[in-house]
Length: 203
Image (cartoon, rainbow, N blue to C red; front, side, top):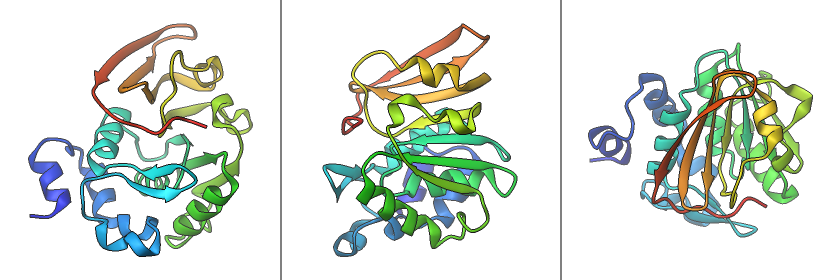
């Protein structure tokens, strides 16, 4: 039984457009050469610079909570290998936009190179920026969704909240929980916590 079927069977992957992205975007394309043979393992793996490509189960869970839609504009903070960026680009399609923000220059280049294999950059769906994601990215705000792929330790930055559209969602690891923040009005958010996950810290 392959990894994606297992994730579907165990209820981690449910939404057809997210499942399709998992099927079409090959995780091996976002892993270092010497690790491509491990792409079907449900584990996180190092990609250099103290960062990892996340466990597929965790990515599936976060995307299901994010619920990206066709045409959305999404800020992908801590884009790393580019795998989640490409999954999001597949989902938002040609009318959508994914801003991938990565603070480590070598990792930004690695992710950008990986994502470019799928033509998402050429089509203008994905744009990579080397910057500190803790401030969000005002240049393209507001966003329908914000996905954060590395853990912060306490409160989420006000910039993220300000750069989100009303009814938008932020999915972010805080310590060892995944949190979902849904913006219900200019100042108010609904919050939900899902504990027991492991992430590298946001740098």
